[in-house]
Length: 402
Image (tube, rainbow, N blue to C red):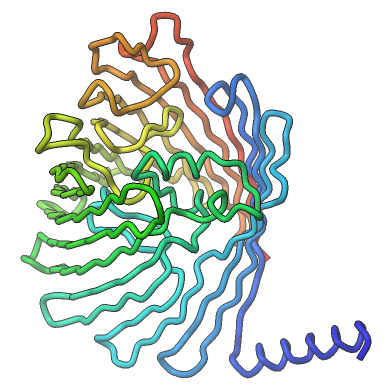
């Protein structure tokens, strides 16, 4: 059979398959240029992403969704070659009854606080709903994820592999750190008429070869209180244990915030939030280390360990198709050794890292088109060397969906 006949047969098989399972499919193209001192040294970057997807219903209660990503990066006058090919969210979802839900595949998971675990994971999750509580369980493996998709940077060995240039001949330069994550969840959405509570117990097991193992466990909880309908208050806390062959350390993180929908003629909201995580204190209490490297800023992007941030933002929909946003944040380190930046003064005893302000605009004239723009500046604090310049960045984005 020649190539033309093979192509025709494959196309027919695909068409029959899509017809049998009633599949929907599409393609999203995203282009995002950036420019500024916070992108690269007075440089620019461009990221282009193609995301094909297909979804369908196999039978009542059983559905699937498959997506992929092709990513091309340009930075510092160099193209990323070869392009990045990775599997996106890919799930087989089964709902045997209205109260039971199971998901198999590459799926999004986040603990209730967003402080310990957040991102895509490969594995199995499920939940059972009762009248006043929803119970869930999950088991995941991270070693098949693309490293920049997972952002797992728990050890120096994770960091060294993350920094490697992509080379498909070197699996450590592509795949994320190999870890198994197990989670139990209890959600009480109607704890009272105005409150809700969510609890998580999470265990992370290091299954990397060679390097010293780092295992960790987390107990997380978030309490939400709505005293009046436009105002939502939330409080979160995480206690963790991380263990190596020679050491067992506690770590802590917390967050508190409020979201207030203003009583105005337009749809707008003010949000404030404070996040804190422990730094190195002594042999018993150490740096809080989440599974994923969760960035805390827009222009200055330190990760959560040993950091405190205060953030305020305002968002408004000025038109059915136009949204605007503005935010400000201040960063404080909770120890003098964990937060890393080339411009931090190693002799400084100051904990002040500085402040940033940012803004954004989004125009979505059609469901198939979304245009965005934004930018901001970061003003270094006294922990940086005296002549550290202001950092800035501007960005734009175009998203087409077919």
